[in-house]
Image (cartoon, rainbow over all chains, first blue to last red):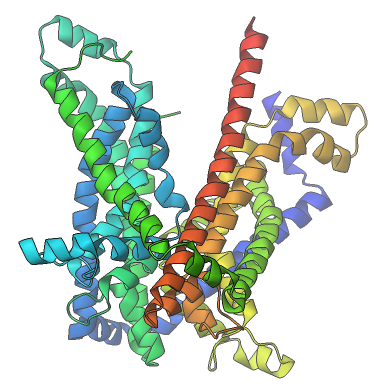
Length: 278
Length: 280
């Protein structure tokens, strides 16, 4: 049966050929050409110029800010995502269904709206924002904590939704056996459950990292765009475009694309190799 | 399956997770709701009825609908050839589909500017033809098309993989044309995923900001979308306008995704029931 199916596929009929051509044309025009153009523009002046552009103080500080805020977010997201997924799969508690529904909310809320929300909560004129500033000297909006918070909001679903199905399908007989042999629950978690959850946790975290590298809508509202202090890579590109600094815009764009692609490829690789789910 | 008696550790985790989601997700949402109505309903309603806002909303809706139409047709075709066709460079095509996920919206806008801007690569071609893309609606459309590209394709691939091929062969053996097979056999099996993919694409298109800001320029009354209206209102410190528009956009996006979710869930439930019946 299978062989005859493949045979049928190999002699593609004209409408199918048309279908394939239009699909390839669409992706080629939409994705490939813009990519080639930015690659060409970024490397037009040579590799040395690219390095020079991204190591200029303001550009470098923007890229580094993007990298460390995204990294911090990724670590917190990995830990909290793991706990949330574990609670959702293994425990019964009031409000569980609501919690499960809330996790997806960040995916459907436009990131600009996320930024507006955070400003309204932690802005220096708002109740909580003023309280934190006066009592703890902690500034969130127009400061770096705001960037991390908005990245956490946006990427919350990635780790949780990556771990959940794996945890659901996890065979519990090993855990029961270990429990019978007198292992305590922490040992069981560390030795049996955690090793199975590390691949989905890693791929989910990397996915959220690659997403955070380019985040703009929430960050531009929350961070306030202060060069050397709260200007991220994506916001730097906007500034460079507006001031017609084409070299800087292309160089930093290329760096952002490069980092995001490598991390995304890594996430896909982990998912393919160890994603035992399905 | 679930541990019956929960220790202190379990309650600790549950509390921590509740606290985390409460502070991270719920608190900002509540802040937006309270903020938008802080001066009562009247100013919010006045904003949402203003012609500047309605123009922006109308532009966003038009573009989002057009993007959904293109994505539904071409996205399904791309998903189809990824699943059913074998050709060289298929792996490359699949990774190209992922590209918009990892691309900063600002960079997307900038790429389009490099193509269609004043000194853009395609300027020598489109300028003599009198076509304006940058700082005009076509640019916003292309930017939105780019950022929302993976949604439909990613939604359709697993569904097309799971299609029941036997039905197609049966129909073909009975002499149905490929057109009939598509509409009568394949399409009904794709319908739920199509609706879901269209909704995700629509929500993503409606909320796009960074790419649209760079390529569209936010010219009031011409290229100002809803997100850009919010951005400009914040910039001009018209907070009630910004907040009420943000709450409308946010709740609308959430609502349509929730509806699509419930349709999908009902369908899955229906299917698992059917499978259970078959097993009997």
